[in-house]
Length: 240
Image (cartoon, rainbow, N blue to C red):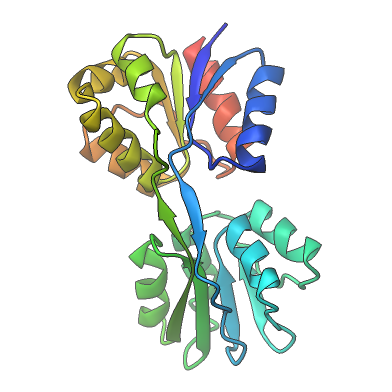
Protein backbone atom coordinates (compact mmCIF):
# COMPACT_ATOMS: atom_id res chain seq x y z
CA UNK A 1 0.00 0.00 0.00
CA UNK A 2 1.13 3.55 -0.74
CA UNK A 3 2.17 5.45 2.39
CA UNK A 4 1.21 9.11 2.01
CA UNK A 5 1.72 12.11 4.28
CA UNK A 6 -1.21 14.50 4.63
CA UNK A 7 -0.96 17.88 6.36
CA UNK A 8 -4.56 19.10 6.80
CA UNK A 9 -5.60 20.90 10.02
CA UNK A 10 -6.66 18.58 12.84
CA UNK A 11 -10.41 18.88 12.34
CA UNK A 12 -12.94 17.37 9.96
CA UNK A 13 -10.65 18.20 7.03
CA UNK A 14 -8.02 15.80 8.30
CA UNK A 15 -10.65 13.18 9.11
CA UNK A 16 -12.08 13.50 5.59
CA UNK A 17 -8.63 13.36 4.02
CA UNK A 18 -7.70 10.21 5.93
CA UNK A 19 -11.00 8.56 4.99
CA UNK A 20 -10.51 9.45 1.32
CA UNK A 21 -6.95 8.12 1.22
CA UNK A 22 -7.98 4.88 2.91
CA UNK A 23 -10.83 4.48 0.41
CA UNK A 24 -8.25 4.81 -2.37
CA UNK A 25 -6.18 2.00 -0.87
CA UNK A 26 -3.45 4.19 0.64
CA UNK A 27 -1.97 4.26 4.14
CA UNK A 28 -2.24 7.85 5.44
CA UNK A 29 0.34 9.48 7.69
CA UNK A 30 -1.75 12.33 9.18
CA UNK A 31 0.55 15.11 10.37
CA UNK A 32 -1.30 18.42 10.79
CA UNK A 33 0.93 21.34 9.79
CA UNK A 34 -1.66 24.07 10.31
CA UNK A 35 -3.67 25.17 13.32
CA UNK A 36 -6.45 27.73 13.02
CA UNK A 37 -6.57 30.63 15.53
CA UNK A 38 -9.69 32.76 14.89
CA UNK A 39 -9.34 36.51 15.36
CA UNK A 40 -13.02 37.09 16.16
CA UNK A 41 -13.23 39.79 13.48
CA UNK A 42 -16.12 40.08 11.01
CA UNK A 43 -15.67 40.95 7.32
CA UNK A 44 -16.72 44.46 6.39
CA UNK A 45 -20.33 44.75 5.32
CA UNK A 46 -20.11 47.95 3.22
CA UNK A 47 -18.09 46.49 0.34
CA UNK A 48 -19.33 46.11 -3.22
CA UNK A 49 -17.50 42.79 -3.55
CA UNK A 50 -16.21 40.37 -0.93
CA UNK A 51 -13.68 37.63 -1.66
CA UNK A 52 -13.40 34.61 0.64
CA UNK A 53 -10.61 32.17 0.03
CA UNK A 54 -11.31 29.15 2.23
CA UNK A 55 -13.96 26.99 3.87
CA UNK A 56 -12.56 28.06 7.24
CA UNK A 57 -13.02 31.72 6.38
CA UNK A 58 -16.60 31.11 5.29
CA UNK A 59 -17.43 29.34 8.55
CA UNK A 60 -15.81 32.05 10.68
CA UNK A 61 -17.60 34.82 8.78
CA UNK A 62 -20.90 33.09 9.53
CA UNK A 63 -19.95 32.64 13.18
CA UNK A 64 -19.31 36.39 13.47
CA UNK A 65 -22.71 37.19 11.97
CA UNK A 66 -21.48 38.64 8.69
CA UNK A 67 -24.28 40.31 6.70
CA UNK A 68 -23.54 40.12 2.96
CA UNK A 69 -26.95 40.98 1.54
CA UNK A 70 -25.73 44.02 -0.42
CA UNK A 71 -22.40 42.49 -1.41
CA UNK A 72 -21.35 40.47 -4.44
CA UNK A 73 -19.87 37.38 -2.79
CA UNK A 74 -16.90 35.72 -4.48
CA UNK A 75 -15.42 32.36 -3.50
CA UNK A 76 -12.10 30.89 -4.54
CA UNK A 77 -12.99 27.25 -5.15
CA UNK A 78 -15.98 24.99 -4.77
CA UNK A 79 -15.28 24.02 -1.12
CA UNK A 80 -15.40 27.71 -0.13
CA UNK A 81 -18.52 28.27 -2.22
CA UNK A 82 -20.21 25.21 -0.72
CA UNK A 83 -19.42 26.39 2.82
CA UNK A 84 -20.81 29.85 2.07
CA UNK A 85 -24.03 28.42 0.61
CA UNK A 86 -24.41 26.08 3.59
CA UNK A 87 -24.20 29.16 5.80
CA UNK A 88 -26.98 30.82 3.83
CA UNK A 89 -24.95 33.17 1.63
CA UNK A 90 -25.61 33.61 -2.07
CA UNK A 91 -22.38 33.03 -4.00
CA UNK A 92 -22.17 35.20 -7.09
CA UNK A 93 -18.67 34.49 -8.44
CA UNK A 94 -16.51 31.34 -8.50
CA UNK A 95 -13.56 31.56 -10.92
CA UNK A 96 -12.79 28.69 -13.27
CA UNK A 97 -9.25 28.65 -11.90
CA UNK A 98 -9.37 28.13 -8.13
CA UNK A 99 -6.58 30.54 -7.21
CA UNK A 100 -5.86 34.16 -6.35
CA UNK A 101 -4.86 34.76 -9.96
CA UNK A 102 -8.09 33.16 -11.11
CA UNK A 103 -10.30 35.47 -9.07
CA UNK A 104 -8.29 38.51 -10.17
CA UNK A 105 -8.74 37.53 -13.83
CA UNK A 106 -12.47 37.05 -13.27
CA UNK A 107 -13.01 40.36 -11.47
CA UNK A 108 -10.50 42.71 -13.09
CA UNK A 109 -13.02 44.11 -15.57
CA UNK A 110 -15.67 44.63 -12.90
CA UNK A 111 -14.00 46.24 -9.89
CA UNK A 112 -12.54 49.53 -11.15
CA UNK A 113 -13.59 52.06 -8.50
CA UNK A 114 -15.34 49.40 -6.40
CA UNK A 115 -14.79 48.59 -2.73
CA UNK A 116 -13.50 45.03 -2.41
CA UNK A 117 -13.26 43.21 0.89
CA UNK A 118 -10.74 40.33 1.07
CA UNK A 119 -11.44 38.12 4.10
CA UNK A 120 -8.91 35.36 4.74
CA UNK A 121 -6.02 34.10 6.88
CA UNK A 122 -2.93 36.05 7.86
CA UNK A 123 -0.92 34.13 5.25
CA UNK A 124 -2.83 35.16 2.13
CA UNK A 125 -1.02 35.73 -1.15
CA UNK A 126 -0.23 39.27 -2.29
CA UNK A 127 -1.25 38.13 -5.79
CA UNK A 128 -4.88 38.67 -4.80
CA UNK A 129 -4.67 42.08 -3.15
CA UNK A 130 -2.08 43.48 -5.57
CA UNK A 131 -4.04 42.22 -8.57
CA UNK A 132 -7.29 43.78 -7.37
CA UNK A 133 -5.52 47.05 -6.60
CA UNK A 134 -4.02 47.05 -10.09
CA UNK A 135 -7.55 46.53 -11.47
CA UNK A 136 -8.61 49.80 -9.84
CA UNK A 137 -10.37 48.43 -6.75
CA UNK A 138 -10.27 49.95 -3.30
CA UNK A 139 -9.13 46.88 -1.40
CA UNK A 140 -9.60 46.26 2.31
CA UNK A 141 -8.27 43.07 3.92
CA UNK A 142 -9.73 41.47 7.05
CA UNK A 143 -7.74 38.73 8.80
CA UNK A 144 -10.32 36.19 9.97
CA UNK A 145 -7.81 33.73 11.41
CA UNK A 146 -4.13 33.14 11.94
CA UNK A 147 -2.35 29.96 10.94
CA UNK A 148 0.30 28.44 13.17
CA UNK A 149 2.23 25.16 13.32
CA UNK A 150 0.81 22.78 15.93
CA UNK A 151 3.02 21.58 18.76
CA UNK A 152 4.40 18.14 18.02
CA UNK A 153 4.03 18.31 14.24
CA UNK A 154 6.71 16.47 12.32
CA UNK A 155 6.14 12.71 12.30
CA UNK A 156 6.04 12.90 8.50
CA UNK A 157 9.50 14.52 8.45
CA UNK A 158 10.93 11.59 10.40
CA UNK A 159 9.15 9.15 8.10
CA UNK A 160 10.45 10.95 5.00
CA UNK A 161 13.99 10.99 6.38
CA UNK A 162 13.76 7.23 6.98
CA UNK A 163 12.59 6.64 3.41
CA UNK A 164 9.16 5.50 4.60
CA UNK A 165 6.96 7.83 2.52
CA UNK A 166 5.75 7.01 -0.97
CA UNK A 167 3.90 10.31 -1.40
CA UNK A 168 3.21 13.68 0.24
CA UNK A 169 0.30 16.07 -0.28
CA UNK A 170 0.99 19.78 0.28
CA UNK A 171 -2.09 22.00 0.21
CA UNK A 172 -0.46 25.42 0.73
CA UNK A 173 2.91 27.13 0.87
CA UNK A 174 2.64 27.21 4.63
CA UNK A 175 2.34 23.42 4.86
CA UNK A 176 5.63 23.19 2.94
CA UNK A 177 7.34 25.73 5.18
CA UNK A 178 6.05 24.15 8.38
CA UNK A 179 7.07 20.66 7.25
CA UNK A 180 10.61 21.90 6.68
CA UNK A 181 10.65 23.82 9.98
CA UNK A 182 9.60 20.66 11.80
CA UNK A 183 12.27 18.67 9.96
CA UNK A 184 14.90 21.24 10.93
CA UNK A 185 13.87 21.12 14.60
CA UNK A 186 14.17 17.34 14.53
CA UNK A 187 17.60 17.50 12.86
CA UNK A 188 16.49 15.61 9.74
CA UNK A 189 15.97 18.39 7.17
CA UNK A 190 18.41 17.13 4.52
CA UNK A 191 17.34 13.51 4.89
CA UNK A 192 13.68 14.53 4.81
CA UNK A 193 14.25 16.48 1.58
CA UNK A 194 15.98 13.46 0.08
CA UNK A 195 13.08 11.26 1.17
CA UNK A 196 10.52 13.59 -0.40
CA UNK A 197 12.47 13.65 -3.64
CA UNK A 198 12.34 9.86 -3.76
CA UNK A 199 8.57 10.03 -3.28
CA UNK A 200 5.69 11.43 -5.36
CA UNK A 201 5.00 15.00 -4.23
CA UNK A 202 1.77 16.77 -5.06
CA UNK A 203 0.85 20.41 -4.43
CA UNK A 204 -2.34 22.40 -4.80
CA UNK A 205 -1.66 25.34 -7.10
CA UNK A 206 1.41 26.93 -8.60
CA UNK A 207 2.24 29.13 -5.57
CA UNK A 208 2.62 25.99 -3.44
CA UNK A 209 4.65 24.32 -6.17
CA UNK A 210 6.92 27.37 -6.40
CA UNK A 211 7.47 27.39 -2.64
CA UNK A 212 8.35 23.70 -2.66
CA UNK A 213 10.72 24.11 -5.60
CA UNK A 214 12.43 27.09 -3.94
CA UNK A 215 13.26 24.83 -0.99
CA UNK A 216 14.62 22.03 -3.15
CA UNK A 217 11.54 19.80 -3.30
CA UNK A 218 10.79 18.19 -6.66
CA UNK A 219 7.06 18.46 -7.34
CA UNK A 220 5.57 15.71 -9.47
CA UNK A 221 1.88 16.69 -9.54
CA UNK A 222 -0.13 19.92 -9.64
CA UNK A 223 -3.73 18.93 -10.44
CA UNK A 224 -5.84 21.12 -12.72
CA UNK A 225 -8.55 21.32 -10.07
CA UNK A 226 -7.35 22.91 -6.84
CA UNK A 227 -9.10 20.58 -4.40
CA UNK A 228 -7.85 17.87 -2.08
CA UNK A 229 -9.49 14.91 -3.78
CA UNK A 230 -7.98 15.81 -7.14
CA UNK A 231 -4.59 16.24 -5.47
CA UNK A 232 -4.83 12.89 -3.70
CA UNK A 233 -5.94 10.92 -6.74
CA UNK A 234 -3.35 12.42 -9.07
CA UNK A 235 -0.48 12.03 -6.61
CA UNK A 236 -1.36 8.44 -5.75
CA UNK A 237 -1.45 7.65 -9.47
CA UNK A 238 2.03 9.15 -9.84
CA UNK A 239 3.29 7.08 -6.90
CA UNK A 240 2.28 3.77 -8.46
